[in-house]
Amino acid sequence: QVQLVESGGGLVQAGGSLRLSCAASGRTFSNYAMGWFRQAPGKEREFVAAISWRQHYADSVKGRFTISRDNAKNMVYLQMNSLKPEDTAVYYCAAGLVYGTTSPAEYNYWGQGTQVTVSS
Image (tube, rainbow, N blue to C red):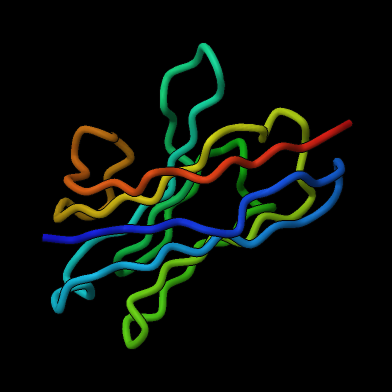
């Protein structure tokens, strides 16, 4: 069982940066692939980034966002730079045992989400 708690969301101007954090419980954290997803109003939840033995990124965030993890601290991070208004969404942290997947259905555990709003 893994419990996830996101933090770090907020309001930022276009071009700015935010760093999201996800704190995970559980002694087997390092076994899990970790992902970040986002969901804007009226849209489906979409993949943003994932990390296991390597990182994966959605094309829309490549070069702007960086996912990282600290297994000693049971933490996952999403550094978001050069933010755009279209990045506005609720961002979710997720954990799963299928490595390299971008499908939300493959992730077993989810946090409650943190709101990111980018103003133009």
